[in-house]
Image (cartoon, rainbow, N blue to C red; front, top):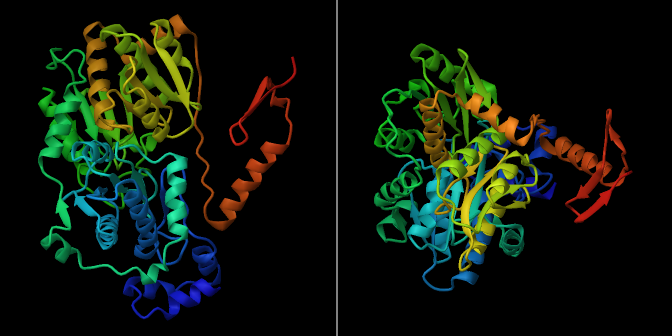
Length: 493
């Protein structure tokens, strides 16, 4: 294992990583060094620790070097990048490291002074006319993970053809140990790194409030419980709800940034466990709705009061309700487009099409929705709404990523609006089913980690690529669509 020896012999190895390296057994060493961290659907994500297959300052140096070279090819002069980070362990260190590597390439960085929601980063890239953006986050994954997401000059995550350019630059990068960086404080003093102006957050909130359809709704008889699940939405989520005129109830224990997410079994609003504490608050205060944002504040989940109990709505159901609310309350200027992804339920699409809206389905990942939204510029088509089943929504494309704060506003407003008509959101969902047909979906998360997990995933995918099936259980398969090969095959008759 040549990689291990190189790390063992490097005299300037970070002391914490050096200590960890000395404690790993053979299997742990294999897993930490058997491969390099690679770009996936949302950038790089991995377990923090020592090794080429771990998130650490050295693997990040390579990623930032490649991204910096990519930026310089697109913006040869005056290049700048905005950097945000979440509440996880080492996120601030990784943000500083990113700025240091970019500075070594002559790229200026704007770094947020505090933990910041991912959608604010997307907005800031465009607002500051930067060349790109970086978010250090592992979203709602367990505490041992961290990640690195990169954005283009429009504040949109890089689609594969652009990410491939970054990967190509990484492949040509020097050894991570040979990438030399300066002290972060010195870079700040010389203006090579600057803090993001405070006005960015205020301008972002101003744009979010503009999406309100019924801003004059009476909010005195509506109660919302809000939790950021120890993440980045605590400050802006609180400020937004108060500026909108609500009297929100905050889950006090979870308003505090906590890299261990110690009050929840999972900081993922897709999981019922994320709502346990919020629902306790809701029951104590007879709240109408609970809203939870994930740690980097791009996803949102809701639990609504119905018949004395709190019912969790999934991403497809919430998306359908929001579209239903918008098409019946907001003026529609046709032609206009609703975007979803190939794994999203067709219920929202049926609602949109009933009002003459075009529906475009993209591959999985909000970067595809963001890049498609950009294509509407200069045409007569309007962006109307974008969403995916995994609890991501955007109402206005001043953010080119999913935005939990836009969704927070709209979920509360829709629930308040329908309450004023004597309906809960569950009753509205039943109304939608009666009109557009009943849809049932469920999500099952299966976690397969490490080398063995990666190999098992590859075997499973290979099996389904090459094994013909006519039934799943008692259900007949009518069509097989392979997104790897772009082939669609009708099965049976």
